[in-house]
Length: 290
Image (cartoon, rainbow, N blue to C red; front, side, top):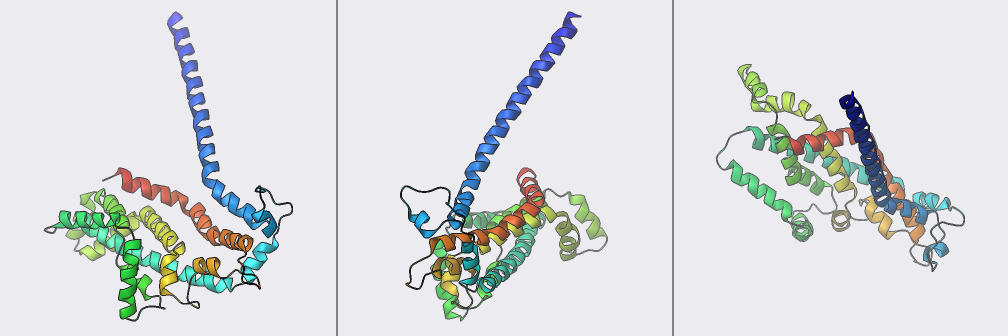
């Protein structure tokens, strides 16, 4: 009887401890959510202010009256739909190509045997430590000499070249797939290309979505490459937002820019919200296995 009562008390104590730990975890997660959402909330508040409220000292956190007209001006003062379509076309093309090319390279590193494969993989990973800003000017000179400036071909070539990080992601995922699947396919007469397309790609759907999301946001949020390689008619929304919101006297319109920036990040946020399940699966599947 005494033992049973002791167990009951112990179970209740453990339950209370778990509840306290869960409560503390939720508080920490909520605080982190506020910290990470803070910049976007500040952007929305800036988009609803007047120019006077934006430059006021001390800073006014909340606008006296929400200026929804800033969003109208953000959409009409420049050719917002055209620049948005340029960004969407570039980001989608780049994301699709680099996802497929990285999957193919990752498959080769994970399943094929070749002399020097490990050394090549180490060289590939070492390129991740090279900042992109160091290569953008030589890349511009190269594309200029072969006549690809003011075209979208650089993004196609970048997409076909694969990404070291995405190659590593696919390699880790493909390495964890049982060898028996490809052995059975080889016995049935399948070549490596068919094995990759019919077996490995369908199994890697979470990683494909993850790679597409990451590469899409890379291209969608890129400013340097479009600013260097594209003219005013072909450039992307990121460049247009920073350059062409001005009043008749040539002064910048920061509140209208903030409204345009809020519209600019909205598609990426919506895509992530709808695909976050696959994103989490892809990261966990590639990071834990293999």
